Length: 464
View (tube, rainbow, N blue to C red):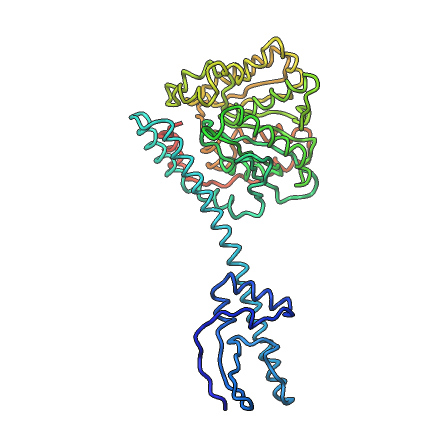
């Protein structure tokens, strides 16, 4: 019997696989380059001497089919069993590596998203200053987040690992020009669509903020597209409106590829996102009312606009924001100076005598707001709706007694069951669709994500 000894582990791909190697050999070679474990198994060798020539022979530690030489019929059967065992082992190893690589990519993406959220939060603190007011607000924010953490964990898991979420779809060539799609499980026929612009004080807006709304609306057979956009100081308000408009254009022109109904597209924004969305909508109407200006989407493609806890007259809000901690100097920097406040106030823009005819192009506008909202008073929605009504626009405000800035968007959805704002929104979208309304009537209550006592404490300590 030839003597055997284990040689030092070496890596010599060219000596193992020739240029005429089979596709399986090349696949194994690629895995060996990427994975040290595969390299150990493929390129660790036994050395034995050729009995006739007395020269060393290198044999792989994991034998391949081509490594065996059949000498007798009995040996052939033995070798075939060994080949099947080796082949099954190799394929199993490749399958495990593929699953591990896929999980690794998901974890890497989750880490990158977490880093971005942390960086945005620190950026907000840097721009707002570190005075007593913001130290107390930061502590309140920490308590608020801790109390809602059970819900955040569940929503985060859905966002990163659900097959119904399409993250990071590119809609433009600028930084942050990405959107997330939340798709219903039911795919029988085209679905209504909401293009959603998230809030974040124009500084920490992020597409993932809409994941809870996206998840719950997709359960009612509604597609949600959460649009990301450049924040201050990466961009100012004109950049934000431009990004949102591009995202809306993408939804209008491409949502059919994802099962959306191009004739049932709605635009929605929350907080600062409601302001940005309204600016984008009115700016588009002004362009269409003019002559010779090309556009990539039309106001007529938007079936209705929903504003949630938004501010639409910046001249009335600048002092209020200053008292709340969004200091005048910072806010004016975001809005490109005091002279631009009227230009980026939807309530004032639409009253300009030179462009008032653009109001006739606007879709129905529905504004939701809580009466206990201290971040943006509910009068902001009420006054904007009344202004639009005077101009002939079909508009209304729906106020929810005792609800704060975050109750309608976070606490109530995490409470589970049914809440008024969500049901009002779904009813408007499904209006005229008897089949969808029948499904809504028997829809199971939404799952509770956070215990009631924690939601009540969060309501009390909320810095918003």
